[in-house]
Figure 1: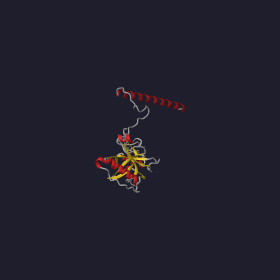
Figure 2 (figure 1 turned 90 degrees about the vertical axis):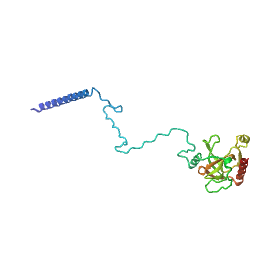
Figure 3 (figure 1 turned 45 degrees about the horizontal axis):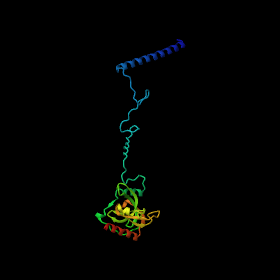
Figure 4 (figure 1 turned 120 degrees about the vertical axis):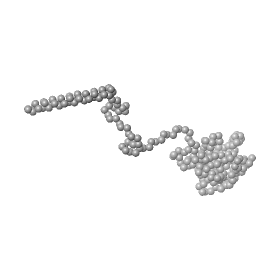
Length: 241
């Protein structure tokens, strides 16, 4: 048979086979649709036609096949009032000590316990001692849940802590009568290294506090023996009466 005739017949056979394949595929599709009640395939809302659907990842595996499961992060703690005495993760050691004071500082009940032994004994030993001025957290009179970082005069050691009296640079000589009406009484102690501005200070004698030794910052300042004795005498006179 001539080559030209062979080429024509080959082309005709390929076209015939292609048409037969299309007809067969259409017939099979129609049969399957009838057997399923005429339902049409539904694609997943997360997939688009022509793209393979994602196979759900089994529980306990990570993105890599067979990788161990990663522990999920806990839900964030709901917002609320900050715990008294809490400190930020970046707080300095001194700030952390002041924060700890809010959990340990409490009123010292002189009426029930009496005054502690008042003995002047400052010492250069990196420990707060009677006669020294240190800084700690002092609760407000009207709200013990709130307070302020203040200087205090260490009066005595009591158990595992210290009995202290708060100090202020505010001049209460001007409103002494008004302060006394509210039960607040102060004694002048002059200025010292505890105040960088060199302001005159006063010590409150009607309200004493007990604070844990780890909750104070030692500043290296102290009253002299004469001024400490004046505070001790004022404390005895006030609480005796």
